[in-house]
Length: 295
Image (cartoon, rainbow, N blue to C red; front, top):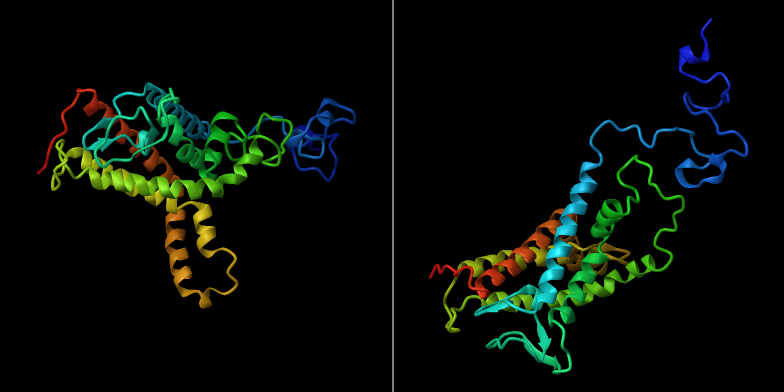
């Protein structure tokens, strides 16, 4: 006669329970917890049953985001080496402080007088960074990478309670659409900077350097990431009852939808490209590197 151990079930388990899911005793520790370890859930002792390296993806994500945070913080507060004619760092454009380096025909709008003593990058970075911080993909990335909420699919998170984005501060994630409205003109200004990059150091038109090529790639990725945003897709095609009555919006919605399918890839590609564009300007402005000219 087979025993419970031989068949893989517990002899004292509920007949309706799945094998290996012994219910917790009444009043036990499990009844005082929440989430996946609540008394109403299957009593599986292991935090997960995965055998792959599930921790690798959130670890790489956290490492990549942390590297960008450290680099961008250093560059934002450095307040130096952000302009080398005709290139201006995307971290400092538009430059809104009175202390900005003079840029001929560049994005110099001294809306803030001499009383602003901090780096001018801090006046503008709040908009593109706010757009990325509230982005649907980046939420998933840093929720999993930094907060382990959850760390991966089919892996129990360490938190005992979950309130979603219904309480402060995460309820602020709902302003993502408004950051999208701010990100569009910022992308437009960076497009203007890219056009200005087709000059030489004496502001003569008709020249192209390595920096011009880097700026073109960067702005293409920034626009692709911005337009692939879920909010952009909803603005274009949301709340339409009949696509047949709105053929233009339907066509645009289809294009944005194809970009949206690659939103994660575009998020990382544009994040890397904007950092590389800034770093290139830093190398040229600091004198560590001379910008090669193609013509």
